[in-house]
Image (tube, rainbow, N blue to C red; front, side, top):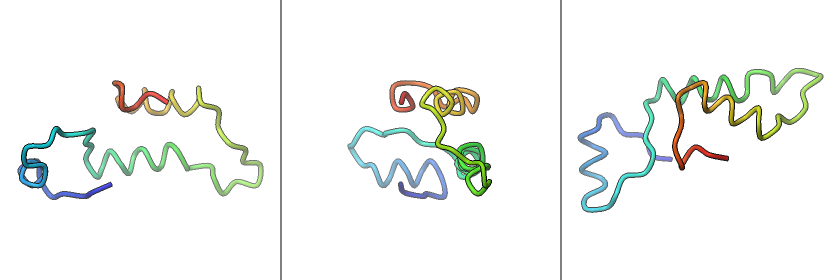
Length: 68
């Protein structure tokens, strides 16, 4: 993962390479919260692939890169 301050900086860093998936820091924060919000609960168990895919879908993270 790389953090950039703007789309222009992403483009400069990429040069002639094709971009991968990009999301904003705020979207990354939403994803982290949705993915791990219950991790410290005493009753926590790993989430299913279907649950995790639903999290990605709900956040609008769709397309081949985001398929589990």
